[in-house]
Image (cartoon, rainbow, N blue to C red; front, side):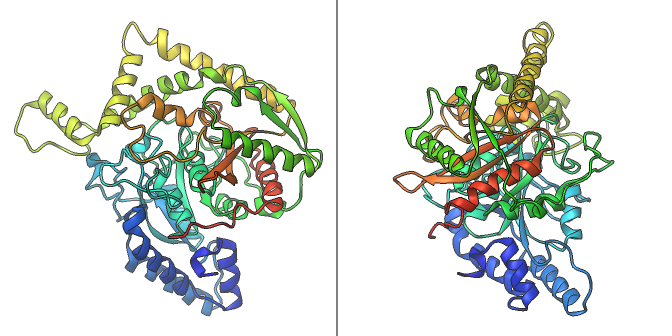
Length: 486
């Protein structure tokens, strides 16, 4: 097995044994990026020189016997919506095409303290608005398992980079499924932590009450490793939870005794692909063989999640993106026009169609005469969705279901039908609205060789239990070691 096909914890072990250096590992991943990027197009920016310099610094610390961080010598790809000092952060938008932040996001600071190698910035749907990574202003990312298909979104670049072995770990963001859905479609692990578990400082906002940063990895152990590094309280983020961060890996291989899995009947209805359903049913049988109890539950408000999300998220997007006006921030039109026309032309030139669509939806939902009928009502339904999960977790430890209703669809298949695209996140959106934790892990492949992901959802700040439940399944199956041939 090549260096690039190994997990992060395997690469750490190789360094500890003296069988590979941080520079060896970094060079191997940079070579893979050079080889497969023309096919995949996962990265918007790669600074090979800076990555090698970071690796050499780690090797020098190791030779000198100095303490090393938890991710010493491990390349990590970063979704290009997280601020990186001195390197472009574009949000895959013409609006921020020339933006180079003067500071690091909190998670970037933590990665640097952990001696990780920041290998590059990955593509996404513009401002994280999309489910296919086709809304990027710069390029379309492709699924490593079938390059005629989408990798999911909005963190499609981060997911594709790990799946294509261009990086062993990556960071994404999840506002309505943007980590878990692409993880499912790319056949890797993707974790959305509880809202507040990871600081959002330096994350360029889409919907501030929904956005959360989380890891992509080849297996659950690596996801736990990366979560340990990035989780924790940050006083610069007022929504950051001041709670201790468990040593997730310490208990990871200890199976949960008397595990009760809730299966929501609402997750198995119209629109669910037959092969996806079959894989999920088989996963339930695996859990039963491990001693878990399967309990049917109901999440009665879940059918309203899509409508609720596309009111709450777009309203917050309308507010957050108002700052990009061509005067104070972001792209300014080159046309010499008056003040109002400068605003209009700068925004119409800087924002793509999907971002414009969501700003319009959100502005309408917040407008006088409609706010109570739409936005305020959506907030009330959001509370009911949270109540549904609270009731469910009183009966079970985790809720299991499909991550996405179908395997990866073809490029261009849903771009003309926004509603069909929005339904790609039908199983993931509720998790964000409720602010709970969710993870997608590989659980099978279709007959045509496309990955299928299974979602586990856990109570707020119960990531330790969620990771242990996911690891139980992973230990009993062999889906996670598989890599696409590129």
